[in-house]
Image (tube, rainbow, N blue to C red; front, side, top):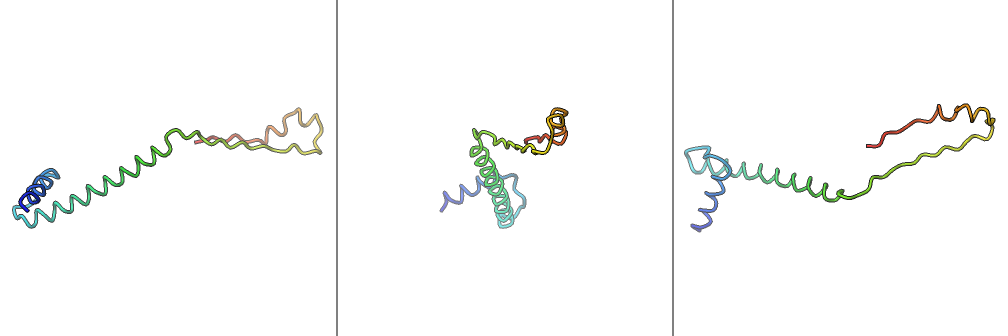
Length: 92
C-alpha cells in the first residue's frame, strides 16, 4: 500500500506542480491531468499507426481515357479540338 501511494505521488508530481494545498483536491486535479495525458497519448498512437500503415504504399494514379467520336474528320482531330476539351487533374 505504501509503495502504491508513493508511486501515485511521483506520478502526480510528474504531471506538474501541486495544484492545491489539500491532498484530496490535488489528487482530483492529478486524475484530470492523467485523463488529459491519456487522451493525448492515445491520439498520438492512432496518428503514428496511420503513418506506419501508409508508409511505403505507392500512390494510386487514375488514368482517364476518352473515346474519339467517329463523326469527327481527320482535320478536326489534327486541329486539336479534342485536346482543348481535355482537362488536366492534379493528384494530391
